[in-house]
Image (cartoon, rainbow, N blue to C red; front, side):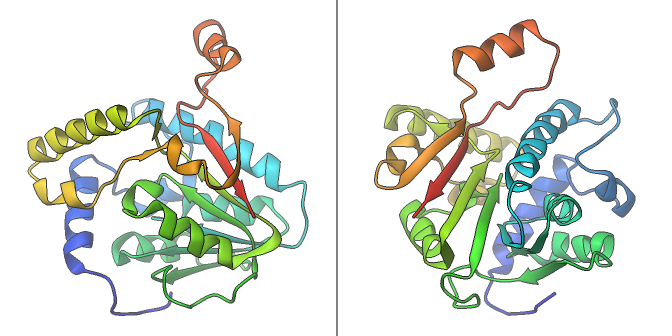
Length: 245
């Protein structure tokens, strides 16, 4: 795990406080089993959704060989580890908070094709045009400037590379963004972490208009809605967005 001193301890303190209150800081053995959790788990339904999205991602990426995969905001490392186990790939998980990175290293450090790094993605750590797939799974909401983020990630992609944004909400209009922001602010106040209001951001589909993108999974499509209502199968509730050069 690469060390650095760039990150604000304030963010990590606030973030981990919220995660702990939500019972998302898990023991190592539980992390190793993710995305599978017991039916008694407080976030069982959420992890059912994560199983759905992660398996679809593995299936999609398994069609390609000798990949270099970068997960930005890897947290405790479960998804990076899942990708490393199931793909012909070198997988790198990066984050800006040490607490869960230490857990990731402890839980999955023996996986030969998997590395975890304490990295600010905006620093020039990775060579340009060196990555095949960049994954943002439940992490894009922690980046305030969406355009700056995507521009930086696009510079790291090979010509055939892709950015995959998953497990995060995208809103249909600025009014929806404003309402979502208000809900988040109320939630953070209720959880006694009002400082997180300035560290959690809301993005809209309008921000994708400037990029070569495709929605690979749309939870609001007729088919997706029917499956959720009729078939007892876990389905994604967030869009899966792929951005290419």
